Image 1 (tube, helix red, strand yellow):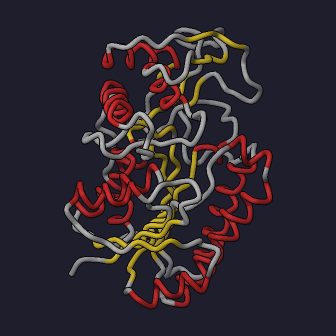
Image 2: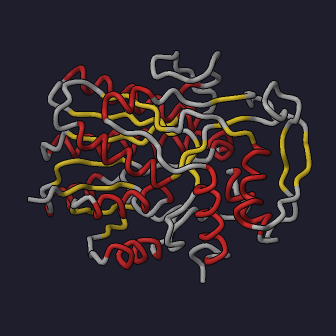
Length: 339
């Protein structure tokens, strides 16, 4: 019998790719999203790609009434929890909104899960919980010290889940700390669709390559790195989605909280990413060097050995695949999901 999986934030960038991979892995999915930072079109495209129908609920995780309606309608075995606000800059401007949506919303979700005896959850955390790591690669046991409200909201939720497990060991919990998700589905039908000017590097590069934006700002060129620009761990969103499924499978036999980094385990500089994008797209990406930004570290990438050891997962898609799939998505959807 196929398991019913609730995906919160299923219309988002990572959530939509996860929905495809879950269906292809044989799960039944129920999708919940309030569409505050996503577009319902993406879920229609997921249905087209998979040739499968699934229920979609426009719902805010802060509404326990609506959550109860969903849990009472389906026998849900696990929740993949990706719903949440995610902009670092916005979180600094609107911290209360982030704590309300991300933290309070998660508490309400956990309360309703408890009511319906659904005690399996995979949580979408973030490498931001490490703050500014003192060394690399970043390991799961490093001190946690988020430095902005977005990161602190993720860390608070991790703490809540750890406390929940300590109070009731019947819970099965995975905390997945993402590094830098990029790329798109190989079909070019779903991908990252930022609203307004992109906050993240890869969609910004893609929009410069297409001429939607004039130039890429590169912050700092004198770091102690291969070319002076910042180094980060970029992971293909499809690899990331598959990591969730491996974690979900592992919860069936795990007797402790799984806390895992999801990255490639390798760093790539800003200019290395730009050059790779130019190579696979055949487009030029003009850039200008700007002053370093406060709080940026020279290099950050994950130690991913634990994920390989514990859940048998490692990334398979390289930087060229990340850039090629991003370009394919952007060319076919120059305005994202807005026709």
